[in-house]
Length: 614
Image 1: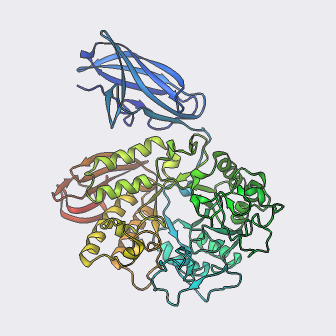
Image 2: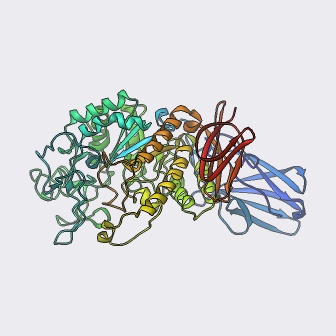
């Protein structure tokens, strides 16, 4: 018999998940009577390993073959903590650790608990939102490109449907400087289409004046790229979105700039006043030179992306604190928040200042961080990050969910892995963040989800350019995407749809995941599916704001409830070949329902449904 303790269940830890200062947490541990326990302690350490407190658990009662010991604790200050149990018996003493959802003596992991600020709030409009990510150059074009002031060299594709440029130059450089002309007017023209998907947030990849088509090499933070349009056209786009209940979130790229920029100006494009040209430049101290001007710190060694000294007072004033700082400028122009690129390369102090500043300007502004792991315990560059225990991020890109969904749908996990990932994030993230999480299946940094679900390929760019799904592969990918997106839209958080995934776009990683939206060539079956999912979320608060409890996560089947107020929904997905008999109720959405009768519902293979309990 094992010692029983599962921090995800209220019978063992109450309350579930994170705490706030001075909030009492009660632990219950069930120890077999045969162990002959004389003393139980919970040892709680700070994140860096120093002892925070030792909690004595006392015998409460005997329940069947178990002795139940209970104890309380609270934290005075916010922080990240880890704990284990120390159990003394008549014959000795041992430590108890976490082993999956079970326990193990002497070896394993510690349990995690965070204490977050009591006044930590996230915008209500971001909770359970539906996000649409747009790579601006590749979504939609209206009118001719304005090339006035466009950073050179560049090429403009003759046709919207031409293949992206992937071949390197004769020097072996990949410039990413081919454009299709997608612009603000194009997004505005398609705003009704975006709204028809149920979207409530548009997240735009960078829009500032830049050399490349991805625009992560900022040339001028406060000026939109001329190919996208004017600032007035950006504002008009935001107004069109706001009229439809849609917010606009911009990409904030503050760890580095472009070498071809107002601030560095290696090519003297901006008049030769950048740090590369003069040590008396107002931007010189933004950068770290080892041998001025040619040797300097750059992002991952790319000399086209010189990194900035984020805590330099002049940089902070320019980006954050100034009257017309970068963040103030774009919020006043119509933006509603920011997604921080490579947020782990920004000091927490920088993020904290940015968060406070945007909330001064707009009390409900949103701040999302690009994090590829569990953001609650993220450790990078020798530092444990305090994204949640200091209340500085409202949301994170939820790659753990993506990985778990793909693993389940592809058959690499039969259910337990998905459940454990979902509940671990639910436990580790503050609930107000958990509901805002950016639940993605595809982004500009990943292969298209259709491709990822059937074809894992790590070949050369030339090989990837020629690699497309066969008809049978496409049918399989479509079936899998229908199931994967059903999970994405019914799990807690904010599903994020990468433009054209709903239209059947395929492609391997950059640049093949950044092809143009196939207007007029959409997969109408997939598109209808995504519209139904968007409508389902719009009509049911439980899907946007409800708690989650799993009742099935094995044998290729997933079942969980979403509960909010008086509404309770049961979510079922049957990936396997066996039929699944499920309880009756009002079906809000169903796919591959084999049999429907008064006695119940039968899900066929690859079937799923949402059932409302009456």
